[in-house]
Image 1 (tube, rainbow, N blue to C red):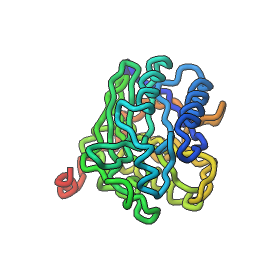
Image 2 (image 1 turned 120 degrees about the horizontal axis):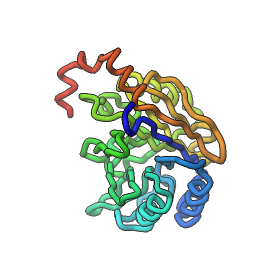
Image 3 (image 1 turned 90 degrees about the vertical axis):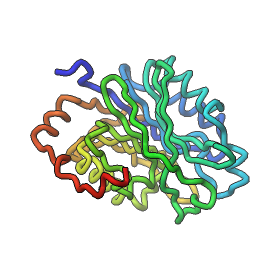
Amino acid sequence: MSLYNKLSVAVLPIDIAAGRKEDNLKMASDAIGNLPYGIDLAVLPELFTTAFVPDKDFCSSLAEGNDGPTMQWAFRTAKAKGAAIAGSFLARESGRLCNRAFLVEPSGDAIFYDKRHSFSIGRESEVISKGDCLPPIARFRGWNIALFVCYDLRFPAWMRNIGLKYDLMLVPANWPKSRAFAWEHLLQARAIENQAYVIGANRSGTDEYGVYDDMARIYDYNGRPLGAESRGCVHAVLSKDSLEKMRAAMPVHRDADDFILKIH
């Protein structure tokens, strides 16, 4: 058994209040404070401090840098809780607005990823600039963790786990219940084809785009659902040994198409 075999994870499906950053940070703090004992990684929804409003001026007024209040809160909370914190926030970078995912470790180490695929149907592409870098990989407690965001889930080539670089993918999201069938099956497909665990960290509540309740998901590397609901979160314990045994028994990554490698 590996030293870091188990990873205890939780999804915090908070009900995001549009534009009310302080209220949302308080909700996130309360949710993290109520987590079961021993959680290693807590994942918040996409744009958990602001939600998305398809108005460039409004979003611009809410956007911040990596040293803004959202990330200050994340660094402080990760250190105090002794757990990694992940999610996404509305960022400003060189005059552009970005939907920026992050993972912050208790040590203060952090990675960032700007959402590649802007949801044009919901006018996100009119406000948010798409990212141009591949998702980075965090090495946390013996696990390799990749960041994606919501709509990225529909683009399997972008999420391809070339060379099994990651063991777990995080997908913060605002994915409405009207498309729940797609959400669940895309998460399962990404888990199966990439031989990795996946966390679909959806929000709760409602907004002009729909209802989001009961959409937080955790799946194993075979696309099987994991997790129990309690204390306002969905949590599960992931096994690195089980993952590695499955990969050894079914090494399908060795047969990946060469042309896919070129986009990476």
